[in-house]
Image (cartoon, rainbow, N blue to C red; front, top):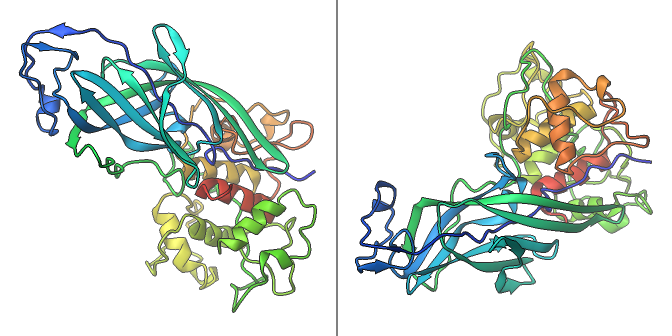
Length: 408
């Protein structure tokens, strides 16, 4: 059986929360946080929300957190941020847009001590999004939510998980907008792909960790001309990653070989994967100078793709300053790069739940645990992770599609 690298992030969840509060009488002055935000403050003698915010439509940023922690939940990757806050006659209604509507089969927020499904304000089947709305009584409250994800990621992988989460609003970001417009996406909104590591591996002397990559159209050089169409790749029939590979080829992320094959079970090296990663994340190829000690051994077709990936903090070099473009990527390295690209939260004390966990290098233990918990990477038969074994081209494509959120 082939390894499967799953996608969450690729499909993870979006949570919104019903906040509880009480009416407060009196005249409210703008707080320091709200004063410069563009939010109006009610001057009436009795305000029907505890913040005294005047009627209108506002944008507001929010955060989904892992339940009972201050860590950002992976669900934050699958919502449109900021959201919208509509205030009418003092009552506050929040609207949040979920990016993976079909896959988020159940979404509930706490109200009156129970978890309830918020009202759907609008839905867009073509973009697979839906906007939910719910009453908010206190923007400073932290409320519980629950989400169920049911995602048939590929013909051979079903992502079926449930999560408890908390939702918080950032009242200091409140800005009044026209009622008919949607709030602009915040510049800091996570993309889920191509992001720097969430934290240090704790061992600067260990080799850099990398995700497996797609090889160019030829075995030792990039494609030179048109490549076989996905439907003509003759060695994909009944392969577990066939759908993902054909999708990647159609998007121009991956290429087949000139002989009409893809070689899905072939191993992949660091140079090949860097190029694949850069394409998938749509990073701008640059001619920035690289400082690796083995620069002369890095193929010219890789270098423009390598520069932005290195700059993003996703892939680096080894302690001797080399990049080792021809080196095959191990599964342990794969896990660390996945965590970096997805910006997953890492618990330094976490231990992977695999039968061969004692064989996983110390510098990769926490990242393997985080990637596995997020549903992004899985083990082999017998619950083995096989950290030292090389990743395949098929595994690389499946993972890259998860990172780029392009898999359907």
